[in-house]
Length: 80
Ligand SMILES: [Zn+2]
Image (cartoon, rainbow, N blue to C red):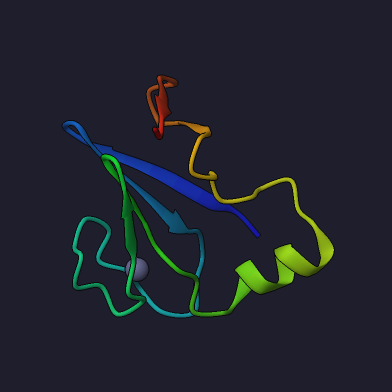
């Protein structure tokens, strides 16, 4: 269960990697009903992996409301 962090200009999207259905990475209208935290668009997994991670734990958690994520250029992006 992996999440990928995608950066486009100042916008960042967190998208499930290898999900059951494709995501529109930077679109709020994505079918997974993503949420926005600061500059980050966080998608939901169609395969329900969030629930599995909450139940069993995982090293690849979604960033929480006060955490940071590392983008493809290895810059840290922090959510306030
Ligand atoms: Zn999505």
